[in-house]
Length: 478
Image 1 (cartoon, rainbow, N blue to C red):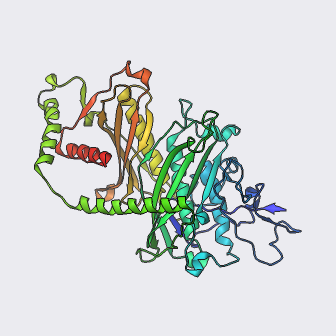
Image 2 (cartoon, rainbow, N blue to C red):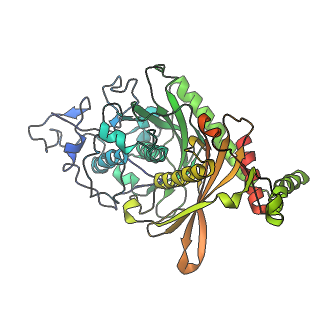
Image 3 (cartoon, rainbow, N blue to C red):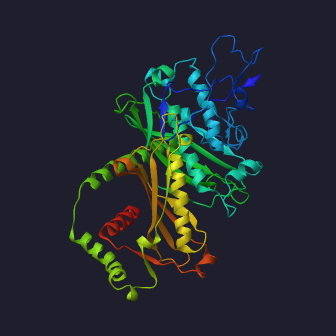
């Protein structure tokens, strides 16, 4: 008896196409054998069942406990493929989670569904069709735990953001997938990521679980909500175990024309699913209103006054540095940057660099910027809304530029350090550079480190910097 788990994988750009090579699923079937999964019997493990059709490989459902759901399907174990190097899929850039998801993706492409899906009947899918869980057994898996440990014995948040992006792509793929023939022309693209706020510290030595599903669908877009859950001896209540909620928005495009494509609709069943759908609908309306407001370039007297107030101290630094406030520092003096050429090992099936990689690189530069500014290892609090403005391709020269945009010092015990990271796709041969992403991270410092180094105010020196500060402060209020 062999058990084959069905789950899928998608990144910031997910292509539902068979134009790219995928490994033979039978060759890797041994990597996917897990207990308590749907299975079939055969006298020869490599033979399909007697019907002659390989059954679909089902997505792991949300589990009520770290081990199993009521239907007997267990969560994806993040450590199952950690020690199994993979070389046949596009790129060589894999985390333990993306390894496991790549394995199943190769099989779902080569396994046609045995029965019509709900999308075929035109009634839409329920959130349960895409609900997926990943389990990180940190308490028992030393090798997996070491992959996610930072120098301060905490969690590497950048890697966690990377996994959230990967899982969101998996879920969007599962929701839209009908069969290989209908999926050939569909391209799924990460459009945005809403603000993510850490509700409680995430530990690296306690088991962690990420649960997600499609919660809202428009004509060609969908929202995926992910929950990061971690229970400890002190927090056994499911409500208390919630560490983070993330909302990803994906849009569907026709891979040939680039125009929007219609996707499966969604039919919420439970009261919670209906509530999540309503909340997502409101967020979608707010996003549209925000885009309209951003297009209106209005200058009023109040904005001019705010600009002048911000620039007043900066002018002192420029014109009379000896008289400048010693508790302040110019934004430009907090900047750090790094550059890289995007390698084939970091690509997805569409040949582009996936969003999780970009988020991790941006976070780690932001962390270093806050570290150098505060004088002690900062504590991560939240990442604000992220828009993916331009795709990043293999071979692109990518530059990340970070700075401390502003600080909030009203609470001396928890000063807030707001970091901006801007990613530019630079083309030296064309002497051009375009912004591909903007990231905004918020950090604080440990209480015992505040007495050792005072957190300074940050002031802009140019009108452009002052406008960026005002935009971010207004966005935080919203």
